[in-house]
Image 1 (cartoon, rainbow, N blue to C red):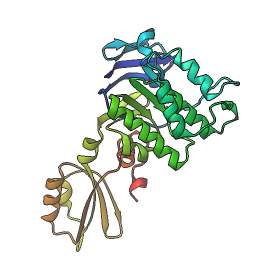
Image 2: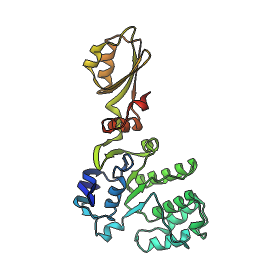
Image 3: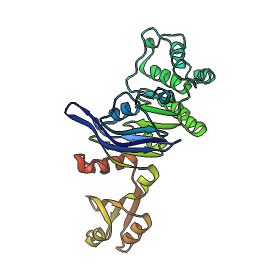
Image 4: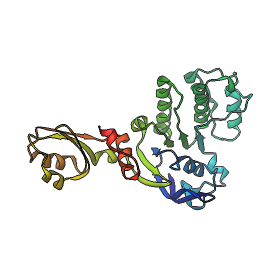
Length: 299
């Protein structure tokens, strides 16, 4: 389990993280989302023990991360910007990481080599960006870590390889109860793989919930009436946003599905369609009061 409490990190006069709290259960996939500059990468580097925090605590299974080499042997991190020594091949990288990760598995390395089908004796510097990303996953998964931290993990991969990578990650979660933290702007993909999601904005955690809960208590209602929109409906529902296109009204409503539908039916609509929000819509709505326009995603 990963637990972050009151995490604060400053760079001179700039506060990148402000008393951020995160709780990531063992054996789950946690999606960390937020606008550019929200503090995601800073939080990740604190979690990896790269940055020393100014306040707060970060623990994995109850142990502090910073200055804890034994714990770091169980944590693998793939950054967005990869770096490999200029002359190294995939096998060179594997040998290097095998000296730092006691759980490194050459058996898994060979098995994953068949999946990625890369030349293990070719210099990584001569590979494309997507192929270099595959090398990173190849070596990372061979380390058999307990915690995997990924920053824009499938950026640069083709659709087929993206599916293969997600399949490998989810297999690790299922078989070894690996804990995965993913930071990504691809909300549609996160929606398919994450158990929980946290939204970060200007260094603060706005919201964190199980993805199923996040999408089950807020809905998008498309409704039309034979006449004017009944104002009494808005009074009976918890309406978060209301737009209109022609005769069709689009409302964002928080509440229970059955109760919403029951209230709407009492006003005898000629059209009523209640749809759960996507993760992208939840993200934009939660940032609606933070300088982001939610209406664009609904129109």
